Length: 130
Image (cartoon, rainbow, N blue to C red; front, side, top):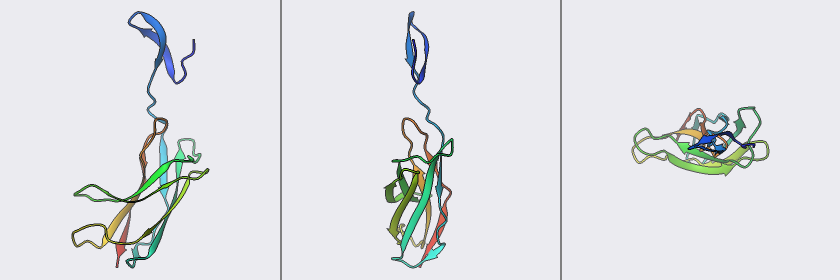
């Protein structure tokens, strides 16, 4: 008897397959560097790549770009999908995201994870919106 993705074991006296939920393969997301200062309305192009633990790009993965908010929920800026090599490319018209007088956005990319792969978050970049 073979248990795909699990182990063969004994449960309550019955011998059978025990399917162990996947903890997910490790991932790493890279957000390419971004200009540190732009004018409001400037089109920003976010690029990067999502990798599995074997350094192969993950295709068809949903990637979110957020503005980090230390006080409230992070603001979702844009969502995209990785190509066959795990690369992503998304655009955004630069604007301030916070209601208080703060002209900067702290940007990061996030992969929320799947049943097969764990979540990952990129480093953050600060962009001053002028």
